[in-house]
Image (cartoon, rainbow, N blue to C red):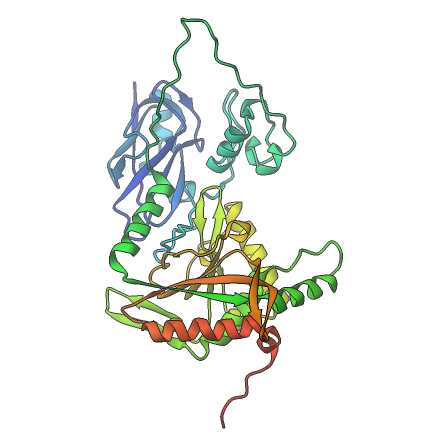
Length: 418
C-alpha cells in the first residue's frame, strides 16, 4: 500500500490555520483527482479544497469547527503503487477555489462565499453542489440525488432547484417502540456564523457606541418615489427609499467629513475619505453581508438604485467578489417591512458610523399647526464616540433629515462659497 499525505495548504495572506467547515468524504471512500473533499474557512476566505490525487481515503483530520494548522496532515490517501509516481509533492494552488475574501472591516456582515471551480463529471452516487445550494435543498425538502445538475461536471446550480417538488417528510410512528423526539438540539457555531459572532463581539467590546434616533417625515419622499416609479417602464424594478437615502447621505457627508472615516487601530490613525463608499447591509442565506456601492457621490439616482440591486443579488447568490465586499467608509442598513420603530445598529468596524432605516408608517403628527396623518420613518444611527462627538452625530442626522423631508434638495447642486 502506498500512501499520500495531503497537508493543509497555505491559503495565503498570512494564514496560519483554517477551520474545517464540512467534509465531503470519509475514511473508506474512493475519490478521484479534483473531487471536492473538504470546505475550510480562514479569517479571510472560504475555500473549497479538491483532492490532489485519486485514491481511497485512509484517514481525515478534524471535524467541523476544528482548526488545522497550515502544513499539518489534513487527509491521507491510499493511492496504490501504480499511482504513486503521479502523486504531486504538494497540491498546486490552482486546484484550490478561493471564495471572495471576508472583509477585515466587516462586523455586522461577514462577506465570504465559496467560489465554484470547474469540476470533473460527478461520480455515481455523489452529489456536486455548493454549501449554499445544499442548504437550500435541505430547507426545501429536495433530495439532491434526484436533481440533474447543469453546471460544470454535473454540479447542481441554484436554477436547477427551481420548481422542484419537495420530497415527502416521513411522519413519526405512534408505535411505543418509536424513538422519542429529543427536547433540545445542539448546533455547533462554525464557519461564517462563528466569524460573524467574533466580529460583532469585537465591535461591541472595543467601540463605545453612541446611538441617536430621529423621526423623519417622509411623506414628500414617498410621493417623489411613487412619481419616479410611474415614469419607469412597467417591467422595471421599483425604486425604494434606500437609493434616495444613499444620495442624500453623500450630500450630507460633504459637510461632515469626520463621519466618512476609517480607524486604523494598528497605527492609531483616522483615515478620512473624500469619496463615499457606502456599505449596504444585506441579509443573505449565509448571514449578513455588506456589499459596497463605490464612489456613490458620483452616481445618479437610477445608477445608485441599479448598483444596489446588482450588489445585493450577487451577495445573496454568493457571486460577490472580494472588491465588491470590502472598502466601505460608512454603512446603511435597512430591515424593510420588518424595520420596527427603532434599532441600535452595530458599527461595521473600522468605520465610525452606521445609519439604520426603520419602518415607515402613517402617524398623526402636528403639521403646519394642525394635526395631520403623515408617513413617518425613524432613522436609527450609531457612531464611534471616540472619534465622533455626540453633537456632530446629531447634527449630521438632522442634516440628513432635512434633505429627506425636502427631497428636491437632494438633486439641487450645492452652491459653494467663493
